[in-house]
Amino acid sequence: MADLITEEEYPAYGIFCGGLGAASAMIFSAMGAAYGTAKSGSTIATVAVARPELVMKSIIPVVMAGIIAIYGLVVAVLIAGSLDSPSEGYTAYQGFLHLGAGLSVGLSGLAAGIAIGIVGDAGVRGNAQQPRLFVGMILILIFAEVLGLYGLIVAIYLYTKK
Image (cartoon, rainbow, N blue to C red; front, side, top):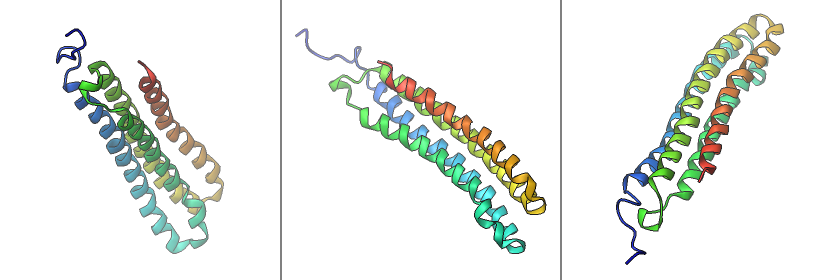
């Protein structure tokens, strides 16, 4: 009788929180990546009409926005792979850690995607008028991208806690 797993030890809401963490990681980081891609991509299309030779240089913000979604995908897959039923020992503590990890990478990815979209929009327009702005645009995009990387680092740290 001492081996029985009780609802008090392994509550069912733990798995809900873990699943919500995986969903949050993917949903919010994908929203950030989508915004960054849409905002930068529409400007690239506009600039490409007048300066088609700049299209490949201008695609960098779109690539960087896509990387944000990869951060969320990595954490979502890690969390989803470790989800077990409460009867198999998935605790509320693990669920809350996974929720925190998912929110960490998801919301920081959302913020980074918005920043990449805004910088990419202005940077592509500016680069079309003054090519010397390209290096500055890349540096600002890196600073925006690293916000998502910080969220990924915190998420992995939270995920590995026991």
